[in-house]
Image 1 (cartoon, rainbow, N blue to C red):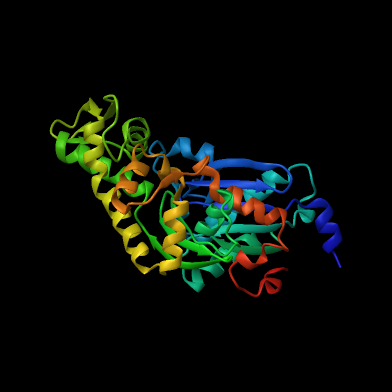
Image 2 (cartoon, one colour; image 1 turned 135 degrees about the horizontal axis):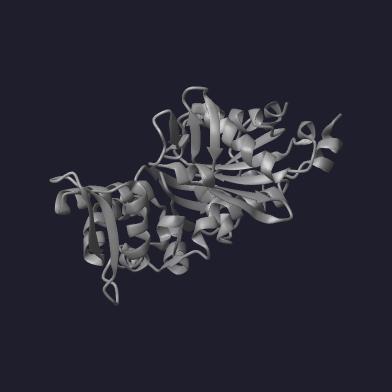
Length: 350
C-alpha cells in the first residue's frame, strides 16, 4: 500500500558495513558517505555523543565517562544497539531534508562470507530497526568482485581477495555464486597490532593503534621498496614512562607485518588447493584481484604473484570496491538478485 510513497521519498542505498569504515552508496548518486565505523558514547547518560569522523577524532583522547568504540569486531556486530544507531545516523544523513517517517529505503549490505545465520539476522534486524523497509545481504567478496567489474554471472572463475579492517575474504566466484570461500580474521587491524607489538618489543615504545595505522600507510610494505622510507612514531617510553619519539624504517615495518602477510598468503594458497581444475585454468588466465584497504600495502601484489605463480592485480580504487559492488546491485536489484544471500527478504520488510 505504502510502497509507491516510500519509493518516491526514499533513496535505495548500498552499505559496506566495515570494521574500520562504513561506506554508503546512494542509487543514482554514487558513494556519498565514507566515515569510520566508530561511535562515541557517554557512559553516564548512555547517550551517543558522536558517530563516524567526529567520533574517530575522540579515539584515545576521551575522558573516563566517554567511550569511543567500534560496534563491529572482525566484520560482525558486537554491539547491536550501537550498530543500529550508527546505521540510522547514516540513513538519516542520506535522506536529510525529507520527513523521517518517509525514510524507508531498500538497503543492500555487504557482510563477511563466514558469518553465522544469527550474525546475518543481526545485520538485517539492525538495518530494519534503523529505518530500512527491506534489507538484503551480499557477501563482501561477491560485492568486491562486482565493484571490480568482474564477470561474476558468467561461466568463468574469478578469485577475489578482499583485505578489509577486521577480516580478509578470499573467494572463488563463478555463475553468480561463491564456489570456494574462506574468511580469516587477519587484516588491517591485525597489521596495526603487529606494528604496536614490534615497537614495544624492539624499541620499548608504547604507541597507539592510530599511530600504527599511520606508520603502516606511510612506510608499510610486503617486500623490498625502491627507496628507503621513514616515519615518526610517538608514544611512551616503557622504561622511563616519559614521552618518546623514534623514526621507524620500512625494514622495521616489513618485519612487523611479516606474520599477518604470511598468514594471508598461506590462506590464499589453501583456497587455491580447493578450486576445481577448470576454474584454476580461468584464474591462471585472468589473474587474482586484490580489493579492500589492505590491497594498497606496497609490494603485496608482487609477493603474492611470486608465491602463487599467477598474475595478481589490484582493483581500481580497492577501498571502495565493496560499496561500489553493493551500489551496482542497488541500481539493478531485479537482475542481480541471484548474487544476494538467500533469505525470506519479504518478511524483512515492515
